[in-house]
Image (cartoon, rainbow, N blue to C red; front, side, top):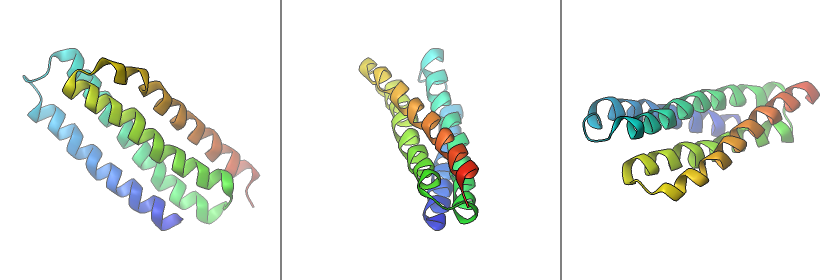
Length: 123
């Protein structure tokens, strides 16, 4: 699992940098300021949680167990739902996507909780 999470973290970090650059350079002037901020929030949280996946990759080698692995998958799902919904919302204006964004945030929070639990209760 360490390779899987390290690879996913690296890919999400790569895409997070690309999204940040796209937002800063490609979307300035094309989106109004509030929607640009929504896009940038998605990129910022994607990068934070991409780095968290790198930490999970290390943690599963040190404290293997179900909670640590669950943390990684919750971060992956959280990035896809939270950041993904913010990207689509900002680019399309589809407002109902704002209703699912908090679910992604809850997944991220659960990931941090599982990581703490996995480290605390790990071998």
